[in-house]
Length: 198
Image (cartoon, rainbow, N blue to C red; front, side):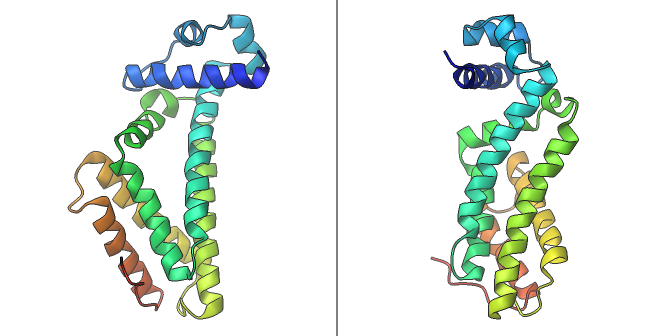
């Protein structure tokens, strides 16, 4: 078995183990037993449990970022913004994805050395996609009031707040309704009109 396959097996087993404990703890021995691999295989691929946890977080955050990048590519820019917000909030409506979010934000992962840096990297990826949408909209006149770098930060913060409410089950509306309301608010602030909602 090649190292890439071993790495995938360990990461998958780590996710299952974390999900089983509600994200409160992770035993490397349990992970290896579940993956059918040795301690030697683990230390050939990871320096520590923290490195494994960060690899798990990075894998998931990169998947989300790729999904958001595809949503951000929609045309025109106003539709891209709506698509982006919908893609983010719909994660909370899918039970399997929602479970992954809860595991990725668990105590065990948050305690890993280097977690804050990894989380900041993910937020920078998300914000970068928003900046790109806003730059496109400013360039073609869709967002006449846009200041892409600063506005992207505010919009990302609003999306994160809505996302957290959806995850916590305290949101006053469904993910789709929230996405439409939030996008409408952002578009008004940017001097644009909301795209037609289908």
